[in-house]
Image 1 (cartoon, rainbow, N blue to C red):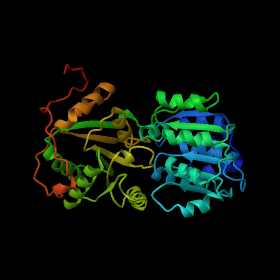
Image 2 (image 1 turned 135 degrees about the horizontal axis):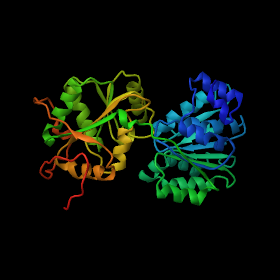
Image 3 (image 1 turned 30 degrees about the horizontal axis):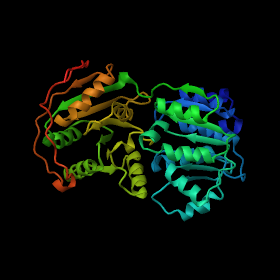
Image 4 (image 1 turned 90 degrees about the vertical axis):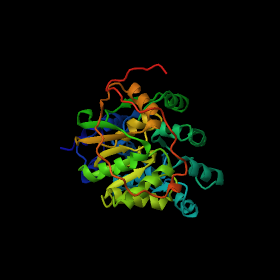
Length: 402
């Protein structure tokens, strides 16, 4: 029996979900769907990849009527996520005759204007939707359901003012659903301002700590690329994500890996939308096995079967480290996180250890490294600055006086 039948969904929707291959609701789906389809305001906390799109998608499918104007609006922080949510909702709308479109910047606006006049469901990034509002090319008067996906990420990216303007332009009598990987005080403040007696639900983390191994290497900055190349060449792995802190670093790393015959591709906010979409598709289909990326790929995007996560640069914020490592050790599979530490990374790494004392991150022995070919130095422009002397880190962090 498909257990989605037990959480109040219609027979047509249950049949579609079964057709898509889903049998058992995830924790966030089981807890949120009954409230969403009743029309209640909901705040949902759950990690990327835990099934949030299906959760709010069920509410959209049960309560949206064909040819009755724009009734469901989903706001997402990135163009990639907008496209992925749109495609997921289209699959869920099988045989329901709904027009579902994605609206975001970086592409021509005229086709969006034409499509908006026919759409019942719109998935949009805040900036481009606000542009349409200012142009008068979108009508929110019939919106019954407003979803803010990856709400905490919206704050991080500075979209909150745009979101508030969009919410204020929507009907007061509506259902609001906020989903977020973490429910921060800022998300709660937004909910208190615009939601009516919201139900709070939380799903378990999708990463299994017992199947996640975390290690770090202490290495000179000028040897990082040699170490990364050596590990990628010698360690058996499936799909690999290599995280960098900047676009410039991402380009430098991917070009160097290619020079050394490693099948790698890059994604960051500086690429065109078509390029970013094609990159994610190549990686998901395993046509390219190493994805070098900024934190644009740490959250929201649906990327599965990642066996290894490499932090070429250690993130400045501990929570970003958690989002990065959440890309592996999912759905019962084993995963490995490899941190490459040079002098400039020590402060950020210490913050991570202090923020998450339960993490067991072991020091790994550095292998013998050979000199490799590197991309042109101009690619990185900013020279590596000298950091503090290298040091080892405890498995359990202790606060140090500075």
